[in-house]
Image (cartoon, rainbow, N blue to C red; front, side):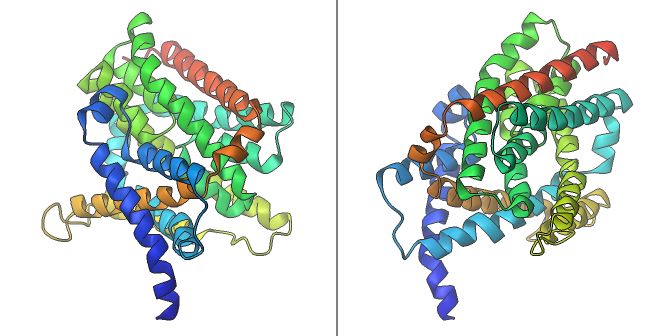
Length: 332
């Protein structure tokens, strides 16, 4: 009981920030003009607070809990958004585009990070975050990489910056390249970072593009499982004994994905799927509040522009490869 009481102040602070971000995300200025989702807002709020204040000792245990076990449960809950039927509906060419471009961006991102001389752990986190699903993938990868605290914060900051830029420029590029709704949806889903950014960019192009982009993004999220599993095996062979061969949240991710694909949850009632998805969104926001509160912008500035350049070049690679594949395979 005493241990639980130690967690409550910090968890309360993280929950308060999550509540504020979820509310702000519904306001027209953030939702319609800036296209800022709740996850982006809660990280920014936490970072701004951290810029002007030191974390009080009473808040640290709860914030650590928000950043680690709570956020990992939220990552596992992403599996509830996956259905095998939706994935198959987008067709083999689109599946090939997103899968190949994701893997090429992952390997290419790691190579670019080495070329620029980034620390190994930071390079891995940037590569995974840029190739798969942004902050959620970074948190999952950090569980097995076990890098410095500032590495995950820097990687999330870079991915957030680039993805927000993508919301603004992708629709304009889509019109310039004369992409169809389906082609733009595949391109946005295959190459933008966060799910909220994908949805915002797709919605700016057309409602049809948004629907396609969302499903394609979920296919990218599905790559989180095998890649984190591979990183876990690699960490084990390198002698990091505390790293499990298969992280527990990865097992839960697969279980949740199976539950959703088999349609085992009711669609209405107190245990209906919408409530589970809402709970996962809250957990994700609370966890990201912990990330933001532990991110010191002064430390990020000291790292210089190299991480931003690495993230930008990986994004350029992913965006270009996926767009070329879309045209080569003549997706409708």
